[in-house]
Image 1 (spheres, rainbow over the protein chains, first blue to last red):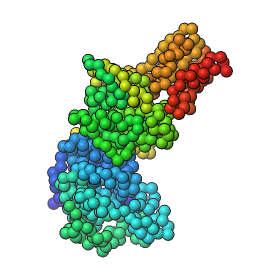
Image 2: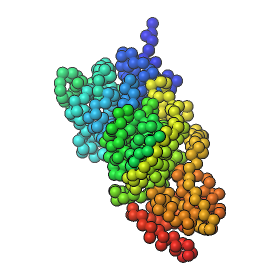
Image 3: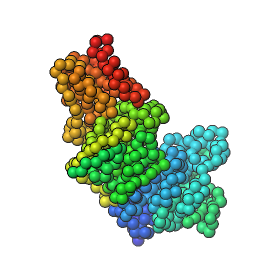
Length: 245
Length: 339
């Protein structure tokens, strides 16, 4: 007997399959969000999904909820406006690292400072995937991208320090660590106040292939090798994933 | 009905509250800050001081979608920052009120001096085609009245409506009657009641369609038709006929107050709904040999009027924030003498 995929009720199934590349991590995050919402029994009416611009920005349109696809970088102030205008609503943001830390970085600084009760899921793939693979604010030092052909020289943004510095919920996981990522989102959704989940995700099309990965499976395996779970710390090392409340 | 001595900016804030404002987000800027100052003392309104004007307009955009009547207020530099999201709000059809108390630009310009340099930015500031409704009153009483109109037009057209003011009218104190003007109620269902998708992408039935030109043409046509229809309700202008003059002086905002002294010598036309341009001007203009637009910029509205009337329009440009009757009179006399 096959198990009924009840979490699919949170998606507009007539819009599936999604349009992301084969091997993309965005679909995994979509499923994670649905599973977490189902576990918490979130009502479809009363939950709002907000996204920014980029590949991940297309996420909001797949949910069978009222959803807003904002301008580039502006998911957070829009989500804050929604939440503050109607505090009964569950407000979630799914967006990318370029959107949240690059063009929208100032809003992240202030949304966390204001501690607005919203949950942000960042699909952090360290690349501007939609525009062809340019260096992003989370690209690692020496990583080769379209705009850093000799390797990136700038320090990646320290999201953890920014969020925990304002005493907000911060969790980091990867698309490989499915159950852990799910736990992160599940706990973030229950957190009262600003919560931020950074999910390291793979872009084979415009990032991995330039860095010598043959396919997205290899990228997922690299998350398995490189990241260790540590849920009992106040500060995650760069190779650790975990939850800081 | 009570009489009150109010500042222009204060009148906007108080009228907004009466017109049903629930949510305000803004960033301090001269000469618009008094609107924020007034609203933080209103207990029924949620007021946010944001990190910048981009955050402000996006916060009110979210709040409006969530069911709150929302407004922001700024001046030129902030208005420039808001442009992308104004286009976004037109595309998503979100009712908003954006107040722009103009100061001398470009850039930081002369922050405490009034100007009318943002006229074209109201209409063309964001990328792509959109058809904004823009009001520009010239007195405290009118600012009060047109704040109601701005909220009503926003709700009726489901679009961001711009209420222009300037450093003079915004800081002017006048005694006004606090009239309770009629209010248009919200028709857009708030977020959290359905499964709609609001997107800035070209869309049909709230789903993105980004490779069908026909869908895009239809969408833009719909936006244009809607704005035209709603704006017909607000054909606001002031016309002071002068049968002994063959010159029609077109002027608006703070500057038009100085022009009232010239009504013995010229016919005066003052648009209040700046955009879409009130068509009545075509009919009125026919009665006069000479059309003169007088404004506090390098000829922004003059070009729009010229384009609409298909005839030459003369320009009197008052720059630098100083309204000097002598300067105005000298320039007008030169035109009168045909020089």
